[in-house]
Structures are given as C-alpha cells and as structure tokens.
Length: 158
Image (cartoon, rainbow, N blue to C red; front, side):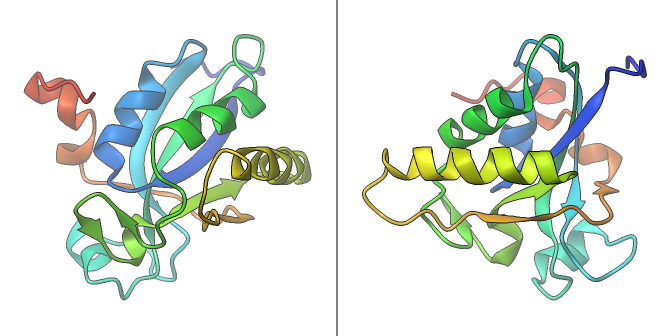
C-alpha cells in the first residue's frame, strides 16, 4: 500500500462488506480497502459479536485512496450506486443494524461533501435516504477470512 503523504481515508457502510469492498477495490485511485467494523461501542469486536446487533457496529470498509487520482466526492458518489440507501438496517437478504447505510467521516470537509452529496442523491430516489453521516470512530479490521472474500473465492459481484 502507498503510505505517501497524499493518502487519505474514507469509511463507508453499505450492507455486507464483501461486495462493498470489491466495488471500491475496482475504483481507480483506490489504494487499499479493508473490511471491518465501525460505529460501535465494543473494542475489538468479532464477526460473531457484530452479528448479534448488540455491539452497535456496522459492517464497513476502510478505503485508502490517492486524492490526486480519485476525490472523496467521487467515492461518495460511487457509494450511492453500490447499494440501496433507502432501506434502513437492510441490504438485500441481510437484515440488522450491522447492515445499515452509513458514511463515517474523518474531517469537517468530508462531512460537508457527504451531506451535499446526500442532498443530490436524494433526487434520484423515490424513498427517503436513511444513510447516517457521522464522525468516524475506531475502525476494527474484520477477521482475515473476510478480507478480499470474493477475490479469494474467484467470485465477481455484479
């Protein structure tokens, strides 16, 4: 991974992290994507704990990117296209608070960009967007077997 001074981070939750990770990994300018857990109240949660819905975490992805090649605004726009942000606590067959739609922001600028993008995105949906835009807290990487899940199994989403 490129740890240059130009690397920035974005954190998104859009349902099961396997497909979300793969979608962002395909985005030019994205350097690394890690599946994990954000927004909860348990330190070092396990997948089994998160699945109970009691830790408060969402399955999420930590996206490291080169802002000279892809902007944060571009990543947020991509976020709206890879899931249904109008279904609270659900994506497809996955149901629970751990599958909620959320943008975990790392700066005031990211918060501003995310909110403006949400307002634009809302015009494309018939139902209200339920996506949370909240300040990022600790991100906990998921277990190794969740990383690059589709890639390691030779599965392509979409």
